[in-house]
Amino acid sequence: MSRYGPRLRGRRSTLSALVLAAALALPASAARADSIDLTTCETSVLRQPFVPWADVAWYELSPRGDFEQPGWALNGGAQRVPGSEPYAATGKVGNWSLTLPAGSSARSPLTCVDARYPTVRFFIAGTGSVAVSVVYGDITIPAGVAVAGSTWFPSPITLTTSPIVATASGGSARVSVRLTGVSGNPRVDDIFIDPWNRG
Image (cartoon, rainbow, N blue to C red; front, side, top):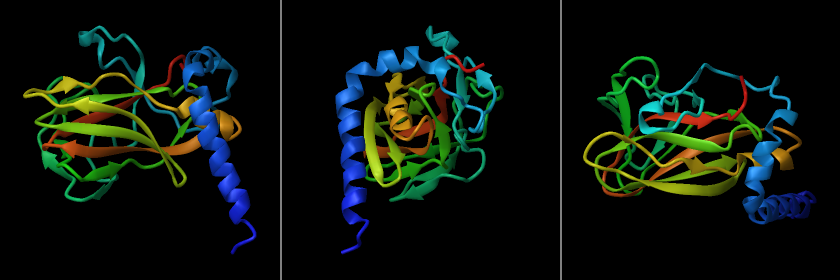
């Protein structure tokens, strides 16, 4: 057995305990968002893509989150398909989206998060549902489920554990967003992360 085994297991256990113990403390973490330095993280243009649905928060597009170019790791039948959400949430109507038949999954490129990145929201259509998770190293942390409808519509605001993961990692962490088809054949497009007060 590797001499690092117990240490790694201990680190995973500590992170898991932090996630569970601090889940109810997320509002406090969000309130302290301005105390964490984001200068070492990549940044992208902030938008308000969900204003028509009474969500005035500022979001940034996740890496390759419009699916206009390949970049996500696709498994189990997940694939880019022609067609996009019609609301031009990224500033223009795209040409591609992602289909996630039941049992398939898609994982985003790594992105830098801290306490300013607590939520994920995207557009969904079709049938069935999609589970959202945050992946940190080899730890996958469930965040929520979005149900598709007959027309494109924003998913619920999904609260992630990014503030907790970042705090446990010394202020920031590189994570991926994982989407998993739970049932039916849903399609998703334009995956946004809400960085709260960064601006």
